Image (cartoon, rainbow, N blue to C red):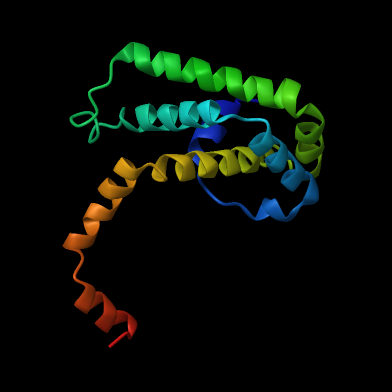
Length: 146
């Protein structure tokens, strides 16, 4: 079973299988058994992967070795979490919900990674810079605020 495409494609997606206790237990284990460094490595891997898109290449000048290094770090983390840190939870979750259970666990990890990055003051400032380009009056009129 090729897990990397499933992992990459759905890392930030929500899924209805979260409701299963075995999947919840795996997600919780993954969250508890990772470090801030692990989550930053995951976010770096996602960032570098998205930088490979033709429309992103012009703004993401990333050296090829960085991509391989990020993939290596995430591959090691994935393997460690499934085989050493949370094997019982992973096995139980997959038995209950199929391979998508792994996706669910790593979706939680992806969300944690994004929360940590967005908590940085420079990231928050960059994200909030869009506010000056939103026509609040039009938005409020559309959603019924005025």
